[in-house]
Each structure stands twice: as C-alpha cells, then as structure tokens.
Image (cartoon, rainbow, N blue to C red; front, top):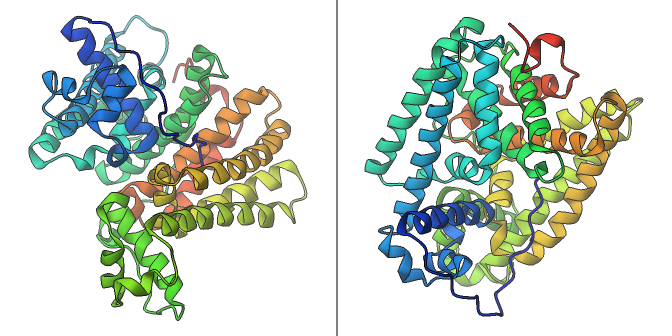
Length: 417
C-alpha cells in the first residue's frame, strides 16, 4: 500500500528544455518515461506527458523513439542488460571474501534501488509489449537466469524453474517496496538492509508446489450475488485488471453482466465512480483487517504476526481488487488522497510493532521494512504466474515472516556462506 500523491493538472507552461546531445536527450526521455510509468501506470501516460515533463514537445520524442511501446521496450531491455552486467561482474569477483551469492544479491539490490522506476516497469508493464518485443525481453531474462542459476543451485539445489518464480517475484517486490524509503535511509544502509532481507527470503524452504496444481484461470465460485451494484463492481474490477481502466467502457461492463448500459448508471455515476469505489473497498478491507488483527494481540510479536497473516490473506483473497487499486488509482485523484490517509495508519501500526520486536532498527529503517513487506506481498499477488500458485497465502506468509525476523549472522550480506 505504498503512498502516491494525486496527479494535479498542469496550470503553468513548462520552460523549454535547452538543446542537449541526442544521446543525453534519449537517456533523459527513458528516465522520465520510467518514472511516469511507475507513478501513473503505462496506460495512464501519453507521449505528450513525457515531453511536458522534460520541457519538449511530445512529437520531439519521435526523433528518438518510434512510439510509447518502443520506449517501454527500451526501458526493460536496458534495465535487464544492466542487471546481467552487474551480476556477471559480481560472480567474477573471486578475490572477495564474501560468498558469491551474497555478492550477487548485494550487486542486484544496489542496482535495483538505484533504478526503482525501471524495476517497477519491468514488474508491471512489460506485458503491454507485442510478441516480437516480448521475445527480446525474454532473451535478456534468460541471460539473467543463466547467470544466477549456478550460484543459487549451490545454496538451494532443490529449486527448479517452477519453484524459483515465487522467490524471484517476492524478492523484486521486496526491493520495489523498500525503494519507497530511499529518501529517508542512506543508500548504503538501505542496500545492506534489503540485501539481508533477500538472503533471509532465499533461505526459506517452502513446500514444493506441483506444477499440475497451477491453474490458468482464477478460481470462481458458482454463487451469484443478488445485488446488481455488487455485480457491476465485481465485474468491473476483473475487467479493469485484465484490460486496464482505459480499455473498459461502461457499455463493456453492462454487456458482461447482461444489462443495458443505462442500468449501470443507476448504481454508479461513471466508470471513475466504480474505480473510486473499488479503491475505497480495498483500503477499507486492509484497515478493518488491521483492526481485527490487533484487537486480541497480547504482545508486539503477536500483533506483528497477526498483522502479517491478515494482510497476506486479504491480498491473496482479493487479488483483482488489490491489483486494480494499485495500478489504476491515478485515474481518480480524490480517491488517491483518501487512500493515503489509510496508508499512513497502516504504516504507523506496523512500524510501532517493529520498534519493539526489532529495536536495533531506526524508525526510518523500520518503515523501510514495512514497505518492503507490502511490496513483497502485493507484487506477488499481481503476478500473472505467481498469483496462480496453490497455497500462495501460506507461502507468502512464510517468506514475509522470515524477512521480519531479526537476521542471524549467516544471512548478513557480507557473511561467508
């Protein structure tokens, strides 16, 4: 539940950017596009938005890229190429006294925390690419997997391709979440903290999941709601996740549930009203779960454990709702502002518990751990593959529980394993 500021419409004219060399301008466009895609989603950003942020016209971007999809592909390819390069360098550094896995994890975390927008784009938006561009991205992923596999195999020989996906996604989500604290925790310290978290996560032994249990479609019960308003809301949430907010109309929603378009307007004023209701619903469920978890708690450790179990269960059982509330909220700034208050309460309660159970952490460090946990969970349930994993709730609870624990000496990123 990472906070985001509402996007305000621009009321001033941006100063025109000075002329710069083509290569420098290209890098600037990529960095800006990645940041905007991270903040507002790929579907919520246009070429003109990117140009305005830099101080150039939208059409001027076409001198460097053929379009928005070309920009998206280049962001992904450059980030993955950089990750392959730092991984290979870490593996080759045989003079270090630190274990290969520790070097590898620290190098990857360092890069990802330095480029959190690019990481977020790779996690959430690359599926917008066409088949040819996705194939290029897949080649880079394969190169990264080839670099990491032998190192991981030394420590976790039990992990196959189907099992490793949850560790990869959870680690990336953890890093993405922790990056929200990068302005409050010094970079070197944050790298150390997050690297230790990843090492703790990798060390967790999950019960193997039979690949035959993975289902291509989400589980849907056979019971139909009587409330037409709830039918509209539930159907819209599913469609928003599948197609994006801009890819769904009120007529589409009405057709999906077998009513006229006019019938939908008797329950919601607009598509934005449906989305705002969904975002409010997601926030309320998390906050109510938080209150229910804390009520019977007898200690900070007990409270933290109950908070974790509650949050994981809510996210897994409401994955469409959680995904939409995170990826599409930029379309409804007022709902974003209200959600921010609930996020503040969520972070306060978790950080309060951590201040007792992990007294060695400063307040900003504890906050970084909280945002890391929320990133671990939400990015996992948003994944189209990991989200179909059987017993996902139990697995995410175990992974996050290990990360919340005070690390032992063997999981420190500078430890020799």
